[in-house]
Amino acid sequence: MVEFDTDEKRATLKVVYYGPALSGKTTNILRLHDRLSPESRGDLVMLDTYQDRTLFFDLLPFFMVTPDGFRLKIKVYTVPGQVRYDATRKTVLSRADGVVFVADSQISQQHNNAESFSNLEHNCRALGMDLSSLPLVVQFNKRDLPEIVSEKEVRDRWSAVGVPILLASAFNDVGVVATFEKVMSLSYRACDAKLRLTEEHGLTEDGLLKQLRIRNNGSA
Amino acid sequence: MDLLDDSPDLRSLVKESQTTLSLVARVAGGKVCVRDASDEIIWESYTENGKETPVALLHFRIEAEPVGTVSARCVGADDVTQLVAAILDSAYKRKLLVRMYQEALSDSYEGLLARNRELTELATSLEERVREQTRELDEAHVHLAREEKVAAIGRLAAGVAHELNTPLACLACNLEALTQMPPNDEETDVILSECVEMVDRASRIVRDLQGFSHVDDLGRVEVDLNEEINLILGRLEVPSTVQIETDYGELLPVLADGQRLTVALLHVLENARDAVAEDGGKIRVVTEVDDNLALVLIHDSGPGIPPDIMGRLFDPFFTTKDVGQGAGLGLTVARDIMRAHGGNLTLECPPSGGTIARFSLPVLNRRAHLELGKSVLG
Image (cartoon, rainbow over all chains, first blue to last red; front, side):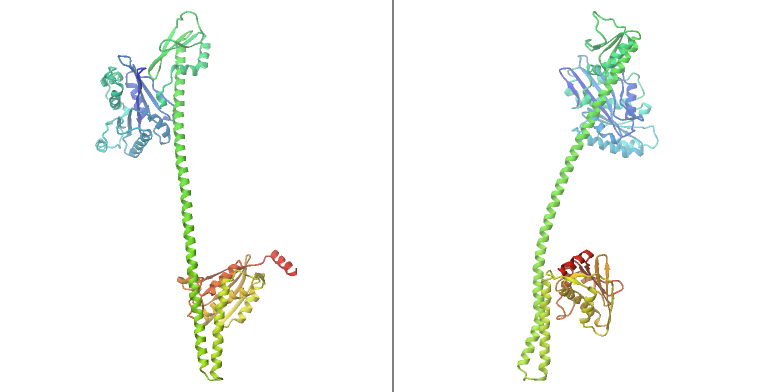
C-alpha cells in the first residue's frame, strides 16, 4: 500500500512490473527512463544482473513536489522473472499500489504467461493483497515478433477479466508509455481518496501524468 | 512492513562510506563536504573557521529526491564531487540490496518454518493413525484367534464324537449279537475279533488325540533317521501292487522324540500308500542333507492334491477319506510334531505328478553332538 506520512507531508507509490522471464519487463523501464521527464525521474537503479537477466530487481524512481509542498515519490520496480527467484519476487511485490503484468505475445510462451500469472495470484494471496481490487494492467509485449497470439484472441481471452489490455513492443518503444500512464492513472484513483491528492494538495490525475510525461511527443 | 519503501537516507550512506570519503579528500588534497537538504553539514574532511567557498557543488539525489549537496575545493573539484556522489550511490545500492536480501531470506526462512510445521504435524498424525490401525488390527486378531479356537474345539468334539461313534456302534451291535448266540458258535470268533478291531480303532483315535494335545512334551534322544524309516517301512502294510524305493543319504543324527517322529512319518507314509494303493504305483523315500537340515522326502506317484484343498490340508479334522477311514488329524499332528522339533513338514505337487511330503529337521552340529555324548557318559 501507499506509504504516506501526513506529518512529513510525503508519500511513496509503488508500481511493480511482473511477468514471466524474458517478457521484457526491464526493457519497459529502460524505455521509460529514456522517455519520461528528467525533471522528476531519477537514475535507473539496476541491481546485479547475471548474463543480462535481472537477479534482484530494477528500480526507476520519480519524485515530485505539489504546489503546497507535498512530496510524492513513485518507485517503479521490475521483479526477476525466473521461477527460482520467487522470494525476491514476493518481496518486491509486497505492498504494491499498482501492477503491470508484462506477457510475452509469442504463441510458444503462453504457458509461461499463465504460470507467471498464477504465481502473481499466489503471491498476492500470500501477501494479503487482493488482486481483484489492485490496480492491474496487462501488457502483451513483443507485438513485433512473428508467431504471436492474435489481438482478437488476446482481447477475447482477457475481456472477461475486466483489466485493461495494452499491446506493446517495448524493444521498439511502442506502447511503453501508454502502459505506464494507464497503471499510474489507476493507481492515482486508488489512492487519491486516502492521500487527498486533488482536494488538499492540488495534484490532479492529469497534473501527475503531466509531471511524469515525456520529453518528446513520441509515437506512443 | 515493506523494507524497500524505507529508503536509506543520506546520513546513513555517508556513515557507511566515511573511510572512503576521507581517502578521497586526502588524495584530492583539499576540502570535501557533504550537506543535507537544509544545508547542515553531515560530513567534512576538516573543519574550517568561517564560511568556505566551494569550487564545485553537486546536488545529490536519492531515488530522484534531492537530499543534499556534495562540495569540494581542490584541484579537479568537479571530478572529486562526482567521485563522492558515486561512492554514496554505491553505498545506497548496497544498502538496498542487503535489505532486499534480508527480506527475501527471512521470507524464505519463514516459509521453511511453516512447511516444517506442516510436515511435523503430518508425521505426528500419521504415526498416530498407524498406531490406531495397529491397535484395531491387534484387537481383530485377538478376536479372530478366540473365535478360531472355539471353532476348533467344536470341530474337535464333533470329529471325536463321529469317529468314536462308529466303532462303538459296531461294538454294541456285535455284543448284542453275541448275547443271542449259542455259546461256542463258530461265528463267535469272527465277531469277537471284529470287536477287538473296533476297540483298537477307538483307542487309536484316543492316541491320536493325545498326540494332538501333547506334542510339546518331547523326550529327545539321538535318532538315526535312515534306521528309523527302515523300521517304519517294515511295519507298514503295503499291497503287492505298490513298489517302495529308498535312497538314503549320509545323515548326521538328529535329536528327537523317536516315538513321535515315528508317528509323524507313519502318518505321511500311510497317506502315500493310500494314494497309490488302488491303481498300484511307487513310493520313493529319499533322505539328504541340506545345509544344517536333515530332509526326508516321501514322493508318491498318486493323483496329487487338488489345488482347491491345498490350503486346508493341515486343518484339524480335514480329511478326504471316507467316514471311518481317517479322523483328519494325521497331517495336523505330523506337522505339529515336526515343528515341536524345530523342523517342518510341507506338501507339494510337482508338475511331474504325485505328491512330495518334505520333512525337515535340524541336524546336530558337531559341538552339540559332543555335548550330548558328554551328558550321556555322565
